[in-house]
Image (cartoon, rainbow, N blue to C red):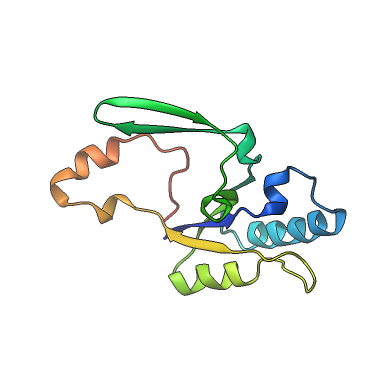
Length: 138
């Protein structure tokens, strides 16, 4: 089962200020633990929304809006893609995310990724032919 751990943005991440050396070291240890456990498929931090854009699709039209975006609680600051056996194991990895006392509030959203088996049998041929950046491991 693949899961995305989505780190929600905050005022701190949206300013674009570099993370502290202590936080970088904590994150490095966390990522290393994910790698050693063999569950990490991908991970990255994202630039602030001021360097991004949104493309809205409505009634056949596309509208591009440049950042920054004000609803910080709806933004993502980074992610991890992990592959584990159960949702509980994914939640345990999310709980282990480094957050020390005195650091800014943070929130991680946990979402399961669709797998080919989640789709109707009648679509399996199409789903299996879709290109995947990271194929799930059995």
